[in-house]
Image (cartoon, rainbow, N blue to C red; front, side, top):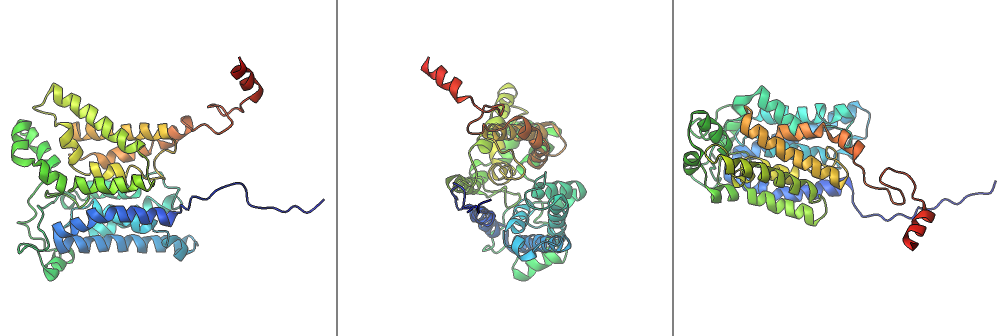
Length: 363
């Protein structure tokens, strides 16, 4: 038997890698993150650092226990990004242990328990946020209006430490509900939506980010800018964002048209809560979303639909995290029945008969 000289196959390398992808997502997150630091001051910075640090430590521990190369996997940036995304969905003045516990849940239970990066079924950050919301509803729903770090009312470096680590929040500051929470509460009291929005909704403030909420849900315009960057660098595709926005707009628009006194308009839904942030940074997760273009459209439409249903009729005012997790569970089914056509094969996977194809074209 003669020697065979094995050379590289006829493949081209796009230059994409896990670390490059994670790095570009972090770059896209920077505008929203830095703006959140400015708006909510030192407590938000401390909570962010604790959440990210806990994610890194949890990742290192799990990798060590599994006998995997710790440095190699830590440097891919996936653990840092998980903690970063989680921090963006937490109340900025939440106590430090909320971020730490959330990171442990995200990394250990939602990611590493399934085998690590690429094998988890559910989005780790959304699993952590949902568990925290159900387990600690008070800490997870205490928001405050923006207190810019440069203002006199904002806590300084030392007071920020006391708020985050000492368990001494300034109760007077934590009095604002998110817009969705206000709408849910006031509608339950029999108020009319137009009156609620007249008192609580300022489109300019919601778009720019001068509103109560987590760092990831205050500024819709910065989330959009980050999303456009991800689209321009081809980290994500248009399918999930367009499908999510389209489904939410269609359903909320129809409901608002039929009963404007009880159903918010599409504009309110799109700029409120974590929707704009989740459209680009959460729902588009490579691992927990479908792989085919059509599958992504179905997935995005499902998330948008479920978000509207949960926001409108469920007990919780925000439904994005629940909607994403529910649709994550459907991804294996979507990927089973909706697959991109392999070159040289039919949609069913059968080889294309070139002779019959040539005859058909000749006819």
